[in-house]
Length: 442
Image (tube, rainbow, N blue to C red; front, side):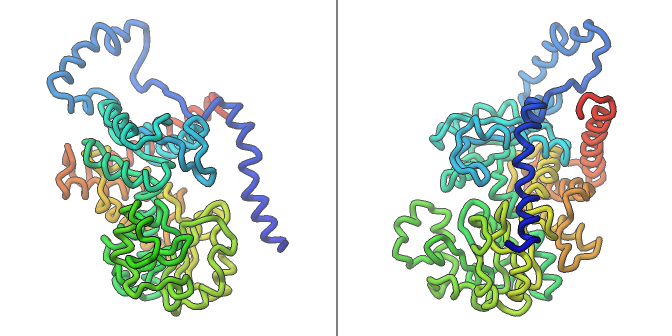
């Protein structure tokens, strides 16, 4: 094995070796702490009984006042059934909890959002939806996570109809947002337009199904789009179309893409400008010979983790001009953690009733603009996650789009939104730094 590959493999395996010990040490990753003043027990006369009754009476007259008088306005449920966790598959709700806690930690640290893991023993999608509806009075938003397909598509679509708080599926909308942001800037570098390029989406799971929808909404031509699953390139005339029809979201894409009914992967790659991989980990899932079939200055997003579908150096050797992966140790990390904290910060700040794909596009455009202002190049097409200033900017973009679409309960000005988002995110970091400095964690 090549020495550099061995080093990368060892680096990729290290977190898994030390994670069990640290998780057990801390007994999990998140906790609840007060944010109001408690100087003596008499303060509970205000925070609890008898004073709290006056607050409950106000909310009883107008349930939306719960956003004013409780932390509902900043509370998100990270909800899963544990049926499609990371690369682990169907491991169940209990085993999903460490992952949901990690997502909640990112929400707080990057977006100043109070998020709580909720693992449901509810495999039936309609029962799952009933539980979401029952939880709605306690939450300002819901982040669906790690749910198997096609159930995840149905739950997202129905939840957005039934609930009046933002609901999104991070594996779908979060990943699609960052893919679009990266592609906007990659196309600028190679001098091509989204409406004109041929795009191959390699893998037709949650991420690429929504990515296709978002890209089309953003201006990509579905007639120049080709989706590749484990059986080849999907199209409306494929022999297993009845099986595909059980997944109407995939079937809808089969009807509007690949008009030539290309069946082989090589045919899809031939002359393609962009390939977006969201499939099984590699290497060699995407082959070098396929990259060689692509158009001049091809763009390759290989986002599978922990090993991308093709190693960046192999993609470059095959002719790729720009390569992105899902890993932080390579340039151009395409990771949904760059999107969800800021977008949820924004929709919570206007108390939105839903989160739409148009809000994702607005956030993606702001992510791309942020990177462009800092000087995009082949190894910098999206911001790094440690460039925290991008999060309040996308929060403002998502919030303004919420107002534009008429789904915001509040309509602050751009400046007010900026100040609120910046304050919440910096406060979260300062609280963490204070606790760390006090020696309460370490």
